Length: 231
Image (tube, rainbow, N blue to C red; front, side, top):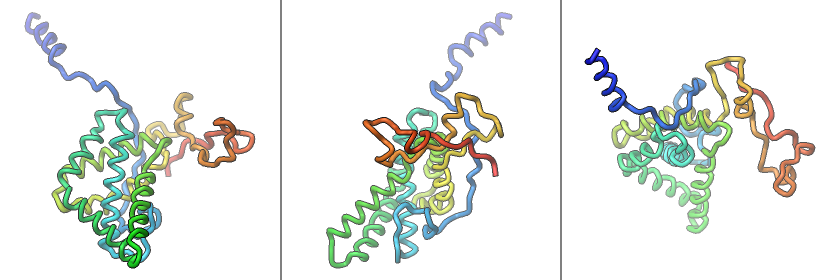
């Protein structure tokens, strides 16, 4: 009995403390075939006439942008380590990231051979759109889980091979921006979760607002639809 009590005391004092923030979600299986970068919707900014190596560079830069957004948007769950994974990627894959950015810049310089300012403007626009393309609200949990998985793989990917992760998992990363919802309890929603599973309306439409208030009579309820079903 004495040994048992001592063991319990050590377990209480030195046992692992639970994480202070967790969420539980069975995500939709987004496993997808690899991409090349030329597929519609894979790269936020279209790159007509881009060479294969330039499309690959855009995919690598897309992974960087996605993990950067995740490092900011997913801090509500520290156990995902999205911030740590992003910083580790910057250190471990510094050269490949720099080469990718240079390849993208070269593409826009070739597309604007007589106007350096136009080339720089196009490059800046590419960066802005590729970052904003990974911002999500209704699918935040799914995106954060996917970014954590990809970020962890990136950390353990050999230097010079970041593009292999981008080619294999970019379609999965894009798919995570869709609000799939909880997959464990098919056909059931707790009342408090129904709001989170509905699809947000197009909040960017100015005519749907009046003095910072949404106008449901003009544009319908702010959230529409039900939780997505399994395929």
